[in-house]
Image (tube, rainbow, N blue to C red; front, side):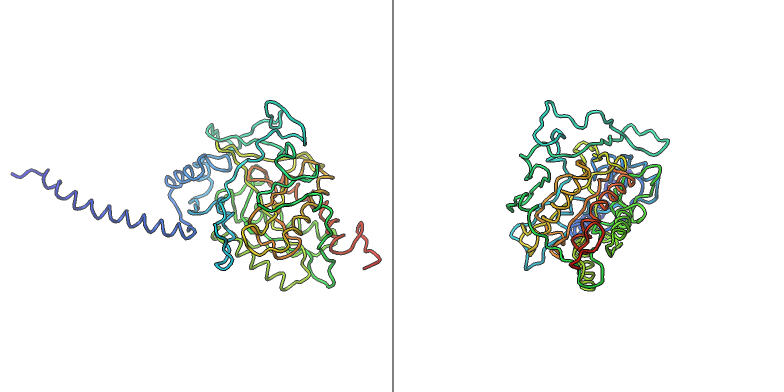
Length: 422
């Protein structure tokens, strides 16, 4: 009678070889597709939880456990090859314009903000981050999630002029090789021209329209992706609606592109939004200002999410930040100094109304489609740690200042009245 053991020994290697080859083939296909920009996949609960933890190094950006997010909606849509680190690569130069070196990836970081958050020139030892504010952990109502990382409220302000270029009020975080002088920017003549014909003077657009805010009891939604939703009631498109309405109340004519340019794929979002900008500017040559409304994400290495806020007349308000592009990567952008001067002047007026509303202007190497007009800027309203309510308060405060300022520049209006020269 033959033993069954030798039979198993012969069969097992025979079956193992095709299984290994199949797994290797799947891995190769996966790697090729991921290298081409990623693709949407739907994962089962266990795989999605594992991937969320591996991708984020924490529970997730909402402060919820991966299991909690999956309980809110099934199945969870996860994207490979995406994420905030792709933002700096999103606006890829064409072959003829490509620089010698590829632009570095933007990795979310607190630098240079991990310093005492005090006015210029003041020092403290040891550093203090808004002493008196509590760390908060947000989770699904009724759920206890001891593994959630804290949500920390801070006011992000420059400690001194050493890390920034500044005139003592307006600060610029210069991440380029370009030489700038803030007082000269503030004194530069405006390149915005009052419209000579009817048509919109301002375009509101959203390169990353799905960027959303921390859900709360008032504004609760099912995320489409991590820190994102296609529901325009809860993402940055909602802020664009508010800004459009408020600027029009100031007498301006505003075009608002409510397209979600970062779906179905995050990659090449800036290419798609540039096509939209060019289409609007071609149709409406009166457009002088293009505001690309985003929200930021500031997360510490241990997973702590930072929620930058200030106190304003509206209550607790999300801090904001202008991002200005440059030609430092070799892409044509002749008017980047005009855009930066526009940001500096607007920031100066905003700080007069609320001295802690604005984080330092961030001058970047990338162009960010800002070559389209002399008044093109990215406006980051809050972070993924802020609530939609806090972001809407910031949007309203922005319009309180930007509305009259843009009316002066684009309509030759003084305090809401047309000047005699018009």
